[in-house]
Image (cartoon, rainbow, N blue to C red; front, side, top):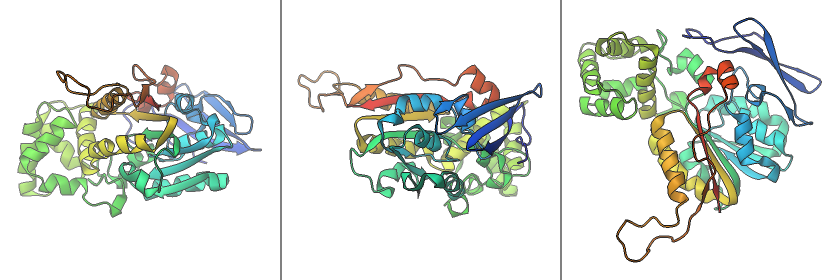
Length: 361
C-alpha cells in the first residue's frame, strides 16, 4: 500500500500505511525525521498503543479513540450509535472492545458508508450501516427510546473528504465549490449558495460560522464578483478572501471555507435537532460523547449538557418550580478534553478537537 500525504499541506501531515500479518495490524507512521513509529493492535488481546493511529486508515484517522472508549465503556455491552461513521475507526474500536457491543453507524456520505461497511464486515450482525443525517438518526435507525448504551458524534469532516479535491471541501486551487456531505445527491452546493444568497444572508454566514469581522465587506465583494461571472472554483472564493483580508493566511481561508460548508450542510441546525433526540434514545446510564471542532458547535454541546444536568431550569423569579424538577443526567467533563500532544504531533487535525461527555440517569 502506498504511503501518502495530503497535497498542498501547509505543514507536515502524518504519512502512514496499514499492514496486517497474522491478524495483527500495524500502522506505520513516518515522522519528520524519517523514523517509523509503529502502532500495533491485536483485537483479540485488547492490547492497544496509540489507539487513534491504530484505528486510522488512509481514509481517515479518528481522534481521541482512547478517550472515547474510556467514556463510552463498551465493555458494558449493548447498542452504540456512531452518528458520524466516517471511515469507521471509532466504530471498530467499540466493536473490538467487547464482543457484546453492537454498533449502528450513521453517515450522510455514501462513500463513507461503503468504505466503513467494507472495513467492518467481519463483525457480521454486530454492525449495521444506515445512510442519513444524525439529526434524524433515531428515526432512520428505527430506535426505541432508551435503547442505546452510548452515542458518539465526531463532528466536522473526514480526512478523505478534505483530501479529495473533487468533493470541493478544500481551498486548494482548482477544486469545485461543492462541499455537500451527500455528494451529488445533496441539495445545494457551495457554488449554488454563494451565487444565489443575498448579501445580508452571506454576511450572516461569514459572521456567525466564520467569526469574520469583515463579513459584510466579504459578502459585498462576492456579490460584485458573481455579477460578472458565477463563482465555481475554490480560487474564486479565495480571491474574494484576498480582496477583503490583506495577507490572508491559510487559517483565514479555512475559516471562511468552513463557514460555507457549515451553511451548505446546515450543520448547526442538525446538531440542535440531534442532541435532544439522541439523548432520549439513551438508556439509563447511557453515555453521550461529542467531539467538536468549531466553537459554535462546542458551545451548543456544552450548554445542552449543562442544562440537562440541572435540577431546575425555570426562569428566575418563579415562586414555584414548574419544570421537570430533576436533572436528566450528569456531565462527565467539567472542561473539554483535548487531544494529547503526542496525538496532535502525529495528526495535526486533532489539535482543534474538543471532547465532552454526559451520562443519563
